[in-house]
Image (cartoon, rainbow, N blue to C red; front, side, top):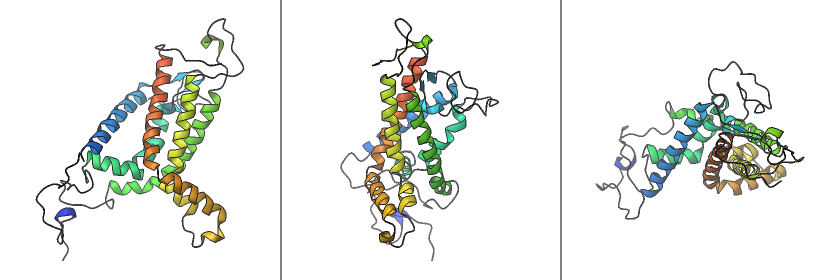
Length: 273
């Protein structure tokens, strides 16, 4: 007979009244995830809706790249096809990197535990009486993750292009000293953007969907040596997928904050040449 009981209360499981027998600080990891994720969501939401202070030549915030709406001069390298858009330009493109992260296998595990306590940690009972997995709405939409991965690759390419643009000489109005600019610009912002795009690519290429794309549905690896080699590389990256997820989360916020501080005149770019 079918039963609605699932998880630790299901028939056949040991009847233990205590929520957990663990004596370590198991709550520290989900609490940290809750605080960090909440802070990032609040920060990213505020910056996305601001619609300003996202460009300080030659740096463009990753939250607004590519800038396809009604953007400030110099920020649009692919034109402004959505110039009619009445809201912030960030809201046009953030759905793609946000959708990729929200449906990511690692992030799903993290925020399921931190926000829904499902379960809060290994060996700790969850407070929910029923469990349906990701078979019902809205969680069944998590299956679109593989498609967001393709979009994430495009975003990664655009952010890489932004890094090359960050080496452009600064316009005279942004120059310091006698107003002259060199043929190549190199500043702290350039280094931050390089680090960010490296973490973005490590996070994107270590994705489980990427591993499936390069090596999935193959009966014999020996007949596909190139795909097998790619699969082994992605598999090695996949072991640290959670690490790259965190690093890229911090780096994208840091670059945006740095551009914001430059655009508002709070700080000046530390220029090397």
